[in-house]
Amino acid sequence: MNQVLTRQTFLYVLVFVGAVLLTMGVAALLININQRQSEAAQFPLRVVEIAADEIDPAVWGQNFPQHYDRFMMTQENYGETPYGGSVPYSKLERYPAMVTLWAGYAFSKDHNEERGHFYAQIDQANTQRVQIVNQPSACANCHAAETPQLIASMGWEAFNSTPFNDMVDNLHFGSSCADCHDPTTMALRITRPALINALEGRGIDWTEATRQEMRTYVCAQCHVEYYFQGEQKLLTFPWSQGLQIENIEAHYDTYEFKDWTHAETGAPMLKMQHPEYEMYSTSLHARSGVSCADCHMPFIREGGIKISDHWLRSPLQDLSSACQTCHNIPEEDLRQRVSIIQDNTAELLRLSEEALLDAINAIKAAREAGATDEMLAEALYLHRRASMRWDFVSSENSTGFHSPQEAARILAASIDFARQAQLLAVELTPASTAAVSSGG
Image 1 (cartoon, rainbow, N blue to C red):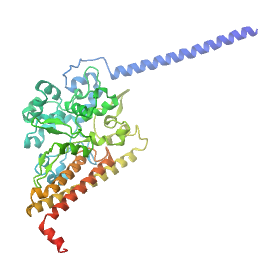
Image 2 (image 1 turned 90 degrees about the vertical axis):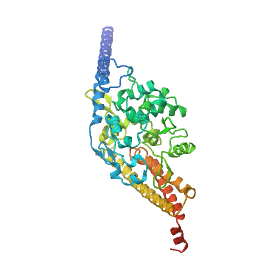
Image 3 (image 1 turned 45 degrees about the vertical axis):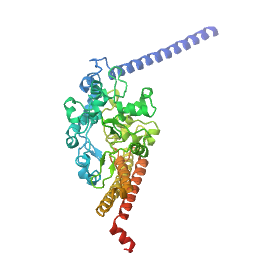
Image 4 (image 1 turned 90 degrees about the horizontal axis):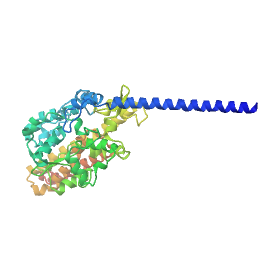
């Protein structure tokens, strides 16, 4: 009897274990099927084959409609943020000090808040700066998807040196899928020679970069400080000595480079562009491995599919996706933290502008009193140093958020250099010297 019960118990156990294993197997199969269905929906069978030279986002969009639809939203005006957004207001009107700070340079005539990536080429072609100085086609490196093809056909030097207005009829697309993605594998890639050259100069092989690193490198193709080198106007990143403002300054000083001569002081000036990558590189986010895309192209759900949001915009427009993935605190607290950083940075920017204006006026007064270039040499160099630091933060599109302490440090130095320039110029002005001597 006991043997019969033992055999029955064994059979029951065996059936139970078998049922459990079968259930687990079916569950695993269903999960696998669901995953494959999701993957198939996100990366479908190709509707069209994307040619190696295809730059029209609409063609790519036939295979990746969710990504394309989000990218096309970059043409939408989502409104203003406290210090940015998608409304193309005149920064010269909002911050009139810029007209004097850039006196003698095209930016003193036209400088607007940028719109979305959809307008990269449209707005570049229409800016007054193109009409004023007929910029080289090097500008198109970041504003036109045709750039890689034109470089391949014309050569790097000829492409960069050709006047932009002579090239504009060949430019029809702004940012494109092809700028960042391989058409066969969809892998992230770098398509702009200037970044490749700059990374090689720093001993970095971008082809060995991780995907997370590439989620920043593709942005660093354009969101950087740059200049036009030599007669060929070769687009160049001033990274030979590092990425911080002092390193960039040392690079320019080594070549005695200047973008223009200030119309009121005669100082050899440097115009900073939009050094988001350089500023970000000093941040806690960068040290923590957070990429540009994590915040500006966060993962979102489109139906049952997870995609990287190609509606590139301010993270303030979607704090839940851009910030709360890592920061488990209320949205309002996050928004307030951003506001504190940006308000403090904006205050420092205005103080820096005031100091620069005072320095410019003091140098003008010294010239009117008879001071020569030789006598003013140190004051002019301090003017250059102060201005490039103000411009580095002003033209960097985060109002300090990308690296708050670095932004504050740079602006503190700007104010210091501007006040030193002012004092040196005042010492060269006879009326001021006489007043000081008489105790006035």
